[in-house]
Length: 569
Image 1 (cartoon, rainbow, N blue to C red):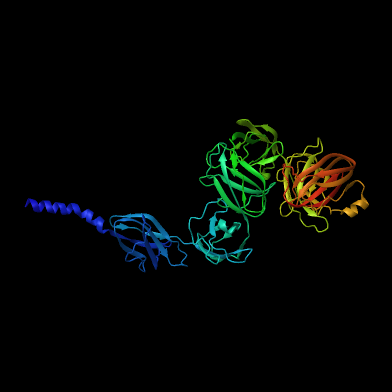
Image 2 (image 1 turned 90 degrees about the vertical axis):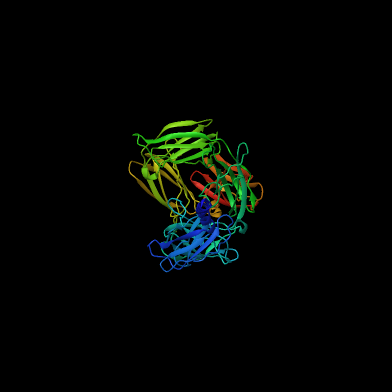
């Protein structure tokens, strides 16, 4: 009798183990966001350890959305896959452990389809394996649900994404040497198809980022901007890897390449300036120097905090822009940035809507932490207007405006003093009298000088017309005040010679690129009579300018003369 009892107790003890060996049942109901059962639906099961598929019975839902499958004890990856075109997302259980019977109810969210094709601008063929990303235009947050987000062998896509308005980016493989593209604010609140998107050819740039001890910096952010300024290029995936390396594709051109730290590293940024990209290029290692804290508190004269104040930092001498992180004041007016140990100029620009005058610290010697205390902004006045071309009345984008104080001749601090795509500008100035100089973005118009522009307590609106440029032949016949000979040789791959004639105590001979940026000043000062000028092609930043078309401009008194120069590599 005792033996029988012992055997009975042993069987009871082994029952749980037997249950684990033979497995259990996973069951439940699959519904969508309306609580309706999802049918048909495929259930795929994989071993979570090996990744191998597991054959099970009952691997689909019933008409009511119910399912029941038998599984041996273990950990599984389980996919609940609705039929294509159902607007429902696949649900994944990445590591579901089964030891006893388990109930799992699943809700499948709905989305909308965005379809289209990506083509190579060179070949006209579809581009395969391009990755699509969706981000919120306001916050930059990625979409929670995205499926089928890679183009097929013909460059086509039919992506399911949460219904919303998204910034949609297309990121080709690096090996294809195609430039990524971003479409802003694409409405995907309903199914839609986009026109074909062309991807242009680019060049691969690769480099690395380290600290001063040459320790690789992971997750550093890389930005690429046109040399001399302008909006940064769209470069998704532009953070360094664990070994500090990065790689991306950009269009041919000349760029400033900026590396910025991420996380809590007390480091400043570093920039490789004027890098000419014509072929695949290895960028010199960017070394992030120790960051020195500069802080302050932005307030009005009555002590009210000013948020959203933008800080621009330029190194001295040379006025080279230094990229800084967290360069806007908080709601309480506080601002804190890290900069390298250099002499610098700091410009604090409140939002134009506040009508507060920007503040500039012309020379800060930074050797350690620096507290600027209260940065006090005076009330100012809007000066707005539109710049148009003489005759046609066409708006002039990228025209540069300088407001020079008549009393003392100082240049007013007016960040953002360049016209937009519609030729419009708006700056904030304190009351006073100014000489306004409007420089065109190219050689098709002459510089306009308005003297004086009187700013009072009321907002001022100006209508400005850039005069047509007088040709060189007409100039020689009509004016003896300023003459500029043709640059020689032209085109040139080396030194360029030219002769200027002027009768002015304040002349300037400068070089401008086709984007309307002054890239070199060859002479500035008094000019009486004839003067031979030789230029070696070196720009204001101490480097030879890249090959391209440039405009050499002589300004003397009220006259302006422009000559076209082609520079060879």
